[in-house]
Amino acid sequence: MGEVIVITSGKGGVGKTTTAANLGTGLSLLGKKVVLVDTDIGLRNLDVVMGLENRIVYDLVDAVEGTCRLKQALIKDKRFDGLYLLPAAQTRDKNSITPEQMVKLCEDLSEEYDYIIIDCPAGIEQGFKNAIAGADRAVVITTPEVSAVRDADRIIGLLEANEIKNPALIVNRVRPDMVKKGDMMSIEDIIDILAIQLVGVVPDDENIIISTNRGEPAVSENKSMAGQAYRNITRRILGEDVPFMDLAGQGNFIAKVKKLFGFRSA
Amino acid sequence: MLQQLFSKLGRRRSSKDVAKERLKLVLIHDRANVSPQFLEMVKGEIIKVIRNYMEIDEEALDIQLTKTVSEEGEGIVPALIANIPIKSVKSSGRSL
Image 1 (cartoon, one colour):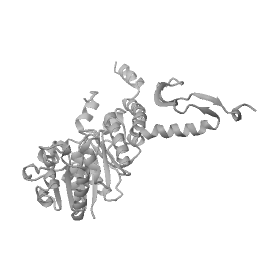
Image 2 (cartoon, rainbow over the protein chains, first blue to last red; image 1 turned 45 degrees about the horizontal axis):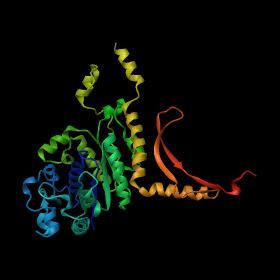
Image 3 (cartoon, rainbow over the protein chains, first blue to last red; image 1 turned 45 degrees about the vertical axis):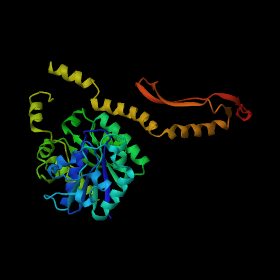
Image 4 (cartoon, one colour; image 1 turned 90 degrees about the vertical axis):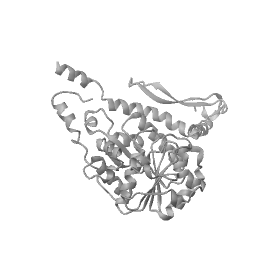
């Protein structure tokens, strides 16, 4: 029996899709059978982040409506053994599926797969309700900004109201240099406010943009800092006790040089 | 000149502390709003306690979360304000 994990945040642009892609890929690299489900109907992106956009024939709505068999809508990722993608429909809207249909879909998928990773759309409307409907647990993504933390708090409240207890937190795009200067909330500050369990800290890393450009998840890149962070998160999701990375002193080189000469980096 | 700049920067509170304080305040309101039952629960408990001492107009009881200026002068703080009309005080509440 597989486990259904929803990746959610409330606010848009904080890294839900990137996290879903990297967590799913990370799990498959550890030998798990994984399916990534993009529930952002109308604004699908998990396909391009995964580099699988050219292989879509059927989508989530087709599978749910019975236009095709579920198996036909699943795209097998040839690079990673055991990894599949169920893409969202692009020309439909969030009301094309119901929470009941999502529950059924998650049940069907968990018969075959170890992990079902649901990429949730931004917002708290129908798309969010669909995404969390079949979830066993949730991972909440935030960044160290007031807007993102506020929305994460709202999402945590809504998850609990929907009986999804103990969501885990990922703080994304942390800039240790700014935290050091007192210009960015630290992980401790954010945990203090949200009061949930931390499952990962991802540094702001330009490798994420590079890997998204190529459609290759950073988790498979050995030299990427963010990739290492996602590998750690993957193992923590599996229940391993992995120490948190020391991010201090890892600010980018140019910022350090600028600081040395007294410039304030932008 | 550089020293001047540094002393100026030093006096200002770090922006992350400002962020944290603003967040804490806004979340008190957000969290109360997420569950409409929250204030109703508080209201029910308050009525239970006060009923032991006085007769109040339960229909007209008004309770809300708001902001107020701190007496210690630390800026704005959240406050729970209750307006409870009293109908009569029970005899047991009088001083002995």
